Length: 170
Image (cartoon, rainbow, N blue to C red; front, side, top):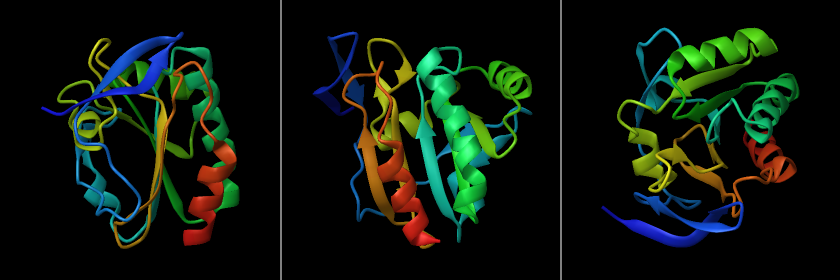
């Protein structure tokens, strides 16, 4: 398994990302995660759509919650863009969070069971078994057009760049 060091930190402490990191221009690897109802959801279920994947360590933290709320708010302005928020939180925690926060435009996915997304996209933090904060934007043909691996996990991603990348593809 590939290990990527020196990419990200948590409160200044270096972390190791596991898996194959993705780059713009690559075909987006298909992955399977669990929906709130515990049913498998595949990236390929959304083929033919522009997809924005918001990767967060846990919706039960301030920055992750804010990131999820921000994309839920921005969803209307983006139009025909599927927004997936993925973490290693249990599906039950994601459902509770979304219900409590009124999250209704973002599709929450749990990578807890197999960490399929985390490993195929290089977002899995070895030391914590959580996902690194970041964003991936995929065009209608399944090609990755924007990627951000946040360097410090307590920081927000660059929302404007990600939203601009998604908007250009609609």
